[in-house]
Amino acid sequence: MQQSQLTVIGCGVFGRAIVNGLLSDGSDEYRLALTHRRPDALKALKQDYPGAVVTSDNKDALVWAAPAGQSHRHIVVIETQPRYTGDVCRDISQAYTEASGGDKQQLVVITVCPGISVAQLESWLPKGTPIVRTMPNTPISVGQGATALFANESTPEDVVVEMRCIFKRISPVVTMIPREELIDAVASVSGSCPAYIFYMLQGITAAGESLGLDAGATRQLVAQSCLGAAKLVQETPGESLSELLGKVCSPGGSTERAIKTLDRFDTSTAVQAAVKEAWLANRAMEALALGSGSNLFFFRNFNIPPTAKEPMDRGRTVLRPYSAADDLMWIKYGKAPQGHLA
Ligand SMILES: NC(=O)c1ccc[n+]([C@@H]2O[C@H](COP(=O)([O-])OP(=O)(O)OC[C@H]3O[C@@H](n4cnc5c(N)ncnc54)[C@H](OP(=O)(O)O)[C@@H]3O)[C@@H](O)[C@H]2O)c1
Image 1 (cartoon, rainbow, N blue to C red):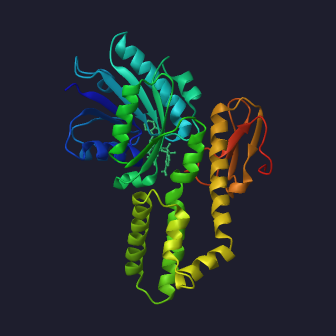
Image 2: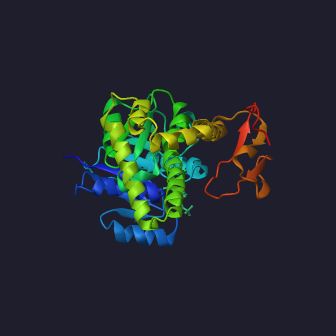
Image 3: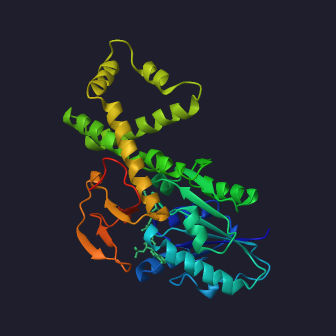
């Protein structure tokens, strides 16, 4: 069988999850190349994946010069934080163009970069490159992710099939979305879903402990209850969520009283507002990539106070976010959405 090449640029948490998924059944379907920019991370990658090419140089000839006749497709997964995506794409473009010279591997680019649109990626990459934007979630690190994919028009069906297979290894649910903007909805629904669940579980375990239960045992009990409830939802597709809820709530019973208490606090409305807020934040990131407007706004609703201001090269102002992880919390918008202006 002809081996394809799979390169992970910025092989961190997500990159490792993908690689582990690919290696989990001992298959050598892909010739692997992994890049990182920190020496300690490179050392760890070399130790953990001895069969892979590991390098700090995204344009390394070892990555781009495929062994003759061995590799017909080169899948490049960009895992860096979104602010580095442009530079990485330019590296890829240059390395691919120089390495190939005309006839060679088919380049396919996968991104896990929220807010970086297909149009933006197409402007940085060689013309006609198949591009697949993905929105996985953190349970991919235990092989239980939920992932949405969006492919650009240059992506042939066989590439879509292969991308689905790759993500299936770490994500039992893989969904193709028909329109790119839905990726923001996916990000706020399943991307953030683990956080919503953790939040709920925090409250339940705190209550359990206050009632005298052992912390470790409570954690195990609620985690398994969560897994079991999720399995019930998956395995009874004919039943609506309200039917499933009704089945757990005997009239006048303790669970019904608990749910009525949640209703009294209008919890369902709060959850919907939380998801909507996440969606707005994701849309704002998208606007950054698409942005052609000249105004700059900062979304204060996210409770992320800017810690510093510094000038950008084109005379704009960047409002640095509170958390280094949330690196795209400043946006450039032609027209600001109502009610969310600083
Ligand atoms: N974690 C989530 O819940 C989640 C959910 C959805 C999407 N995502 C997105 O998924 C992507 C990957 O997330 P992750 O958690 O795997 O990130 P991560 O662990 O931080 O891995 C990315 C790594 O890429 C390295 N890097 C940055 N620029 C590079 C370059 N030019 N060349 C080579 N390496 C470079 C970074 O190095 P430094 O450490 O030096 O910066 C970082 O360690 C991000 O875009 C993130 O926004 C994350």
